[in-house]
Image (cartoon, rainbow, N blue to C red; front, side, top):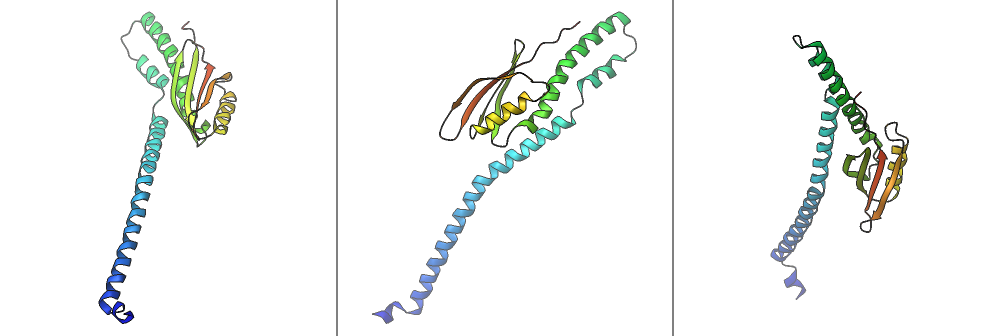
Length: 177
């Protein structure tokens, strides 16, 4: 009976089955790596593209000063418009400075989901993969020149590893005069 199981065609069939199983396991492993790695690469490229586009944006003040030098505009109207535009740009400059510096302040395990300015306050919310990145972010924001008064609104655990946080800071509205 042992000799029947050792016939050459059975050995080749056994080797072929083993080869097919190994190839199937390798294909599953490669598919799993592709499904996990592709979104990570995509989001990293999106983040880098966004950072470079924000860094390459011209400052609004430069654009307004270039437009204010247009001839043929009455001096009183142009000065009032210019003052108003400079006032708008100064607020936009604060936002631009904050948004350009914000990625450097964020720990790697943390992402922001919402930023809103309302009634002289800036509300920031997001998620993290632990409690310590939220504490690190709050400390970094408290040390930032534009947001010296950052306070907790709420920090809660969403599931076993994710935390959701809400921060608020003073963001005074500047007077037009």
